Image 1 (cartoon, protein in one colour):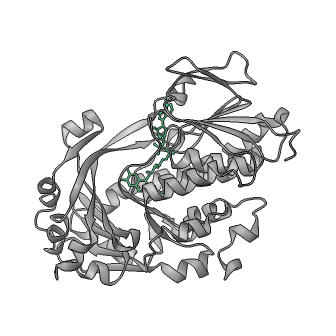
Image 2: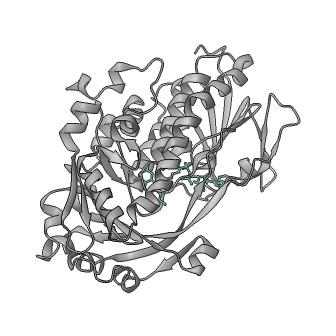
Image 3: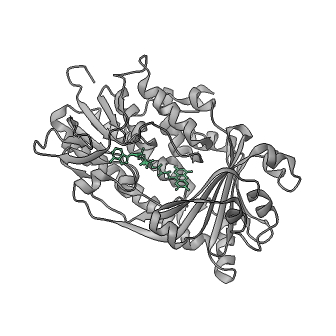
Length: 422
Ligand SMILES: Cc1cc2nc3c(=O)[nH]c(=O)nc-3n(C[C@H](O)[C@H](O)[C@H](O)COP(=O)(O)OP(=O)(O)OC[C@H]3O[C@@H](n4cnc5c(N)ncnc54)[C@H](O)[C@@H]3O)c2cc1C
């Protein structure tokens, strides 16, 4: 886009979705301001996985070298049974993903991934105008008095007008509320414990040593609960997400601190290796209420659009919430970056048409996994395990579909392709 065509975009929310969008829009020549409510930018102390669909977007933004410095690569995804840890299914990751999907499956500490995105947004040498990131800017109102110049109003009374406003402000989006969009959140009845376990403690115990011998992305299936874990920062931590029925307190407060004992005792009767692993957790342990947003085809109002959890919050049972937000960002930038400011509404309509159904299918698949993962032992569970032995995916969504992602109209092959660089 030429300088004369360039126009301005305000993004509300500097999470993984908002920053990916800011970087992608900047690279298309747009002038981007990010308004973040927190006093300091950052992410929760936990891990995150990017499957090939999201890794491809990040590499398309030229981040491959920066990601290679912070990523940990699992060699396979393994599914285990709760009682004895027997393997239900094994999906190759590692080299297989790069070869088959032309993009890697990687694990990170969230703070590291967030910092890579932030540094790229701020980099004065990067393509396009550097992003203006403003912290301590909680948006409380959207003024659409001039529909072509939506204005974000902060709690301190500052007004930020732009040609386009993007609400990337998460599951409890203020932008969404300000637009009067329906309250489509459903509580799942479940919560997730999140914890980091020091890798050296894992390596020192013969009962857990196997976790460092081969890096894997592991899911344990049991009646009414499941457990996910993987190594991050090259083995510095084992990241754990433990899904169990929610307590009334967590349902009420959305998130609450938890203890090592609570975590270790949350899987009674499970394979001995599970409590041996969980009892080693250190530092901050927390429990998070699990919410799902009903599929919602309306993501846009005039020059205002939603992105990420604000429009398609999903249960993390496909590990795809942020990844889908990254796909949103790539498509949004492609659409906005190819039009003059007079055609913004059409571009936003195309953005929703390309993304809402796709993200909706992932929302539904993650929701279906709640029942599918947590079946009591019996004929349905045995049928599920048989399916998982052969099926390349979960629920009804195949990895073949999910990991290829939303196709871009005009991908930059040089940055977009893993194979290109050999
Ligand atoms: C246990 C768990 C595990 C997960 N694992 C994965 C995984 O492996 N892979 C994956 O892809 N996804 C995963 N997810 C999902 C992922 O974390 C979310 O989908 C993703 O973080 C959403 O990004 P976002 O940018 O849309 O919103 P958020 O990350 O919530 O960011 C929103 C930002 O907006 C700011 N904000 C909010 N309100 C305002 C306001 N009024 N004004 C200004 N700023 C505001 C917030 O402070 C925040 O910085 C997981 C989720 C959970 C709970």
